[in-house]
Image (cartoon, rainbow, N blue to C red; front, side, top):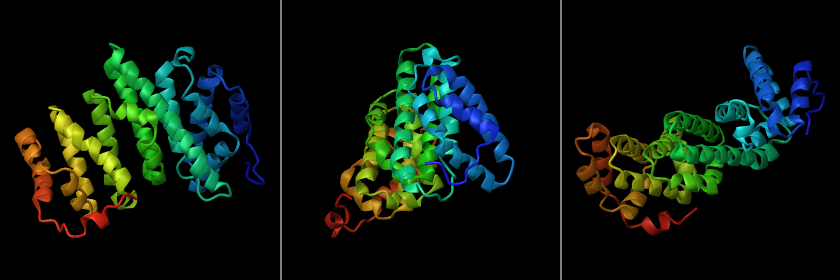
Amino acid sequence: MSPSGDQMSPELKDLVADTREQSENKVNDVLSKLKDLVGRTSLGDQRDLEACKLSLYSHGVLQYCSSSLKFSPAKIHGGYAVLTQMADLLSTCCVGLGAFRDMEVFSHEFLPSVVESLLFLAERLMNRALRDKAHNEIIRLFRKVFDSIGWLLRAHTHLIHHVLGSKHYENIQICEDDDVSFVTVTMWNNIFRANGAVVAEMGNRALTDIMDDIVYKMSSSSNPVIGRAAVKTLVLIMDHSSSTHQLIHRRYRGLADLAVKDWRGKGFDSVLDQLIDHLRSDVPWRDTKSTYDDS
């Protein structure tokens, strides 16, 4: 898997040697050396940074980082905070490698495994937060891991389907804690805001899964933070794909009335009015069935 002619620097050789031991013992050493290597390389030419990331992948360093997210935090000095930093560096190194020979394997085998590791860590943090008195710090780490997931999804949009199909994500999605709900809705909002084209590209089944969850959170929560995030995300979806109007009208009848009843006067009337205007606009029904076969 190593690129032809790839010459390892002494720093990279040292880092690779540390990753050969698949255990908690080397996590802090790997993290420290990886931060130094990537940080130093990022100050130079963009092509040098691409080559550095590719070498990290080719020599198994990124695979170690992904595996480490499933290590026991109790056996690592710094615990969850260190694993969250590892998640951040891993997602950074998985974006911007340029084109290379094993791109297909990287995109469709390695990256889905990275997403699964990130979601594993996120679910673990969520469960810890729900039973831990130090809720705020753990939720902060949970949010950071979801930032890492969102970064990957913005760069590699095909991974959205892997997230939606993950049991770990499903367990996070059904959690009714307000802090957890806000993080998941915000991730989709950030993705759609950064790349509106993905709304039309992802297919109706995936989009429906996301909207079902957002509409459920919007209708079941009384927290204005959740309501605002949900409304803003639905407006983004409808702004970026006019064809979603029919899907939303067909699937969520009565949503406009619910939005007015539950959220009017809660501090975000401007964006709420945009959603209501979308929901109450005239929609052609003639081709609804043929247009919205699942894809």
